[in-house]
Image 1 (cartoon, rainbow, N blue to C red):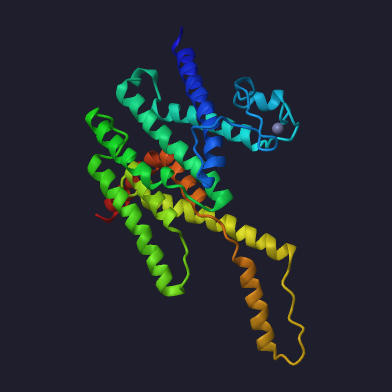
Image 2 (cartoon, rainbow, N blue to C red; image 1 turned 120 degrees about the vertical axis):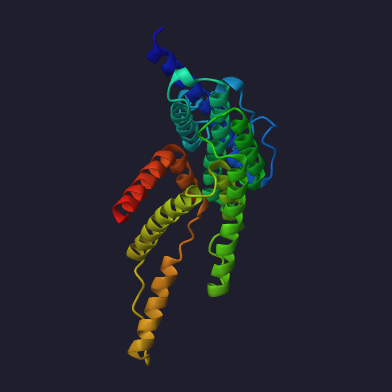
Length: 311
Ligand SMILES: [Zn+2]
């Protein structure tokens, strides 16, 4: 067997693993916000309650075979289920190619690294769906996974893996992520008396710090997260304003400045669309995982060149 075929087969295995865990992710997404066990009972149709047989529970495939309907009551099953499975399969395959760029370095250290980052991806994607739907970030996918982050960094250090922070960097990163966001929340509250980010975001940044170390990763994740979040939130607010333009106040006896004030207040209310921040931070973390190291090297290269010019 030639090398490319072998690599393709390994990538396929990683995708298959992603498919299976994508199926488990669906269970987490629907049960964890309700505090139900993700282990038992078996999955059942949400409409008629009939347990789903193993042969009807094959990721992606079953949804197409059943044409998106329950076998018993024919209630429609959301296409989100196969979509979650398919996207996680793709992500897992890409992760394998990212962590193991060549079969020549397929050793214990790289397999441990793949498993370690696999858990991060699982936590991030599951968290993103749950936060989008329920505005909650489960502790399992944030603060409870911090020991996994620090432990993995420690183990990978022993194994001599190069692509992870040292255990010291991991510890500092977790503290900096958690405490940094806590400080931002506190400062924002002192100034505006409102909660901007939630504590879930602080716990999430602690996890990213544990996996990536403090700098420049946390800074980059926060920048990517807030930029994309602001873009999406801003467009959502703009869409609301276009769909339901605020009316010019018509009450009699109002002065023009008062009318203008009322008008601007209703524009501002349209802008206060609640967009959960977790999914955007998660996007930043995945972007950092896939492109961060090369970005960081380019940045440090650029900084070095600037330093050379100044010298
Ligand atoms: Zn049913």
